[in-house]
Image (cartoon, rainbow, N blue to C red; front, side):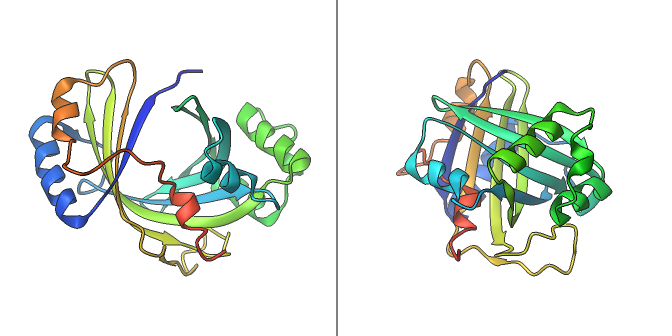
Amino acid sequence: MDFRHEWKHEINYSDMLILRQRLKTVMKPDENAVDGKYFIRSLYFDNISDKALREKIDGVNCREKFRIRYYNSDTSLIHLEKKSKINGLGNKQSANLSAEEAQKIVDGDLDWMIDCDRPLVQELYSKMMSQGLRPKTIVDYIREPFIFSAGNVRVTLDYDIRTGLYCTDFLNTDCITIPAGNAPIILEVKWDEFLPSVIRDIVQLESRRTSAFSKYAVCRIYG
């Protein structure tokens, strides 16, 4: 597996305005974004003991979590993703799902996953059976992405983080979400082998330090 470096900073609105202008001077917007933004909806999985949540809060060195995600309300392309963290480095594996398949997972109709030709789908099925993983909550937010080819750098500004509380029917556009407490704006910086100095310099903000912020964790604030 290929692992990437990652920084996260909790920032405020004023910081975002400054960073947005800096990033535009040296980085390109993601060509797949709409007007420079994505609306992202994710459905996170956890077990009855909240294993993924507890491991994140406790800072467990080797951990993983599963989610299903789509962008800009387009359910024609849905991703099943497994995010792994080892020694502070991150890896993401992905497999496509149809809207019908995603809905079956939400509804607990899982038998089809046994013979699926996508290994990640089979892995999710195995862990739903052995660990009791189940859809837990919806996480919505807006992302502004910027890219820089050297170092395969991706910088994002994430905000308006909302929680679906106990709703897991994430294909239902009528599912109500609410602001996730006082969730901050999140600056994320991801890169492969090296982070170019020009990017390192422009993302620096006075009195801001890296954090272990988790959108899933903050969206579990109400339970």
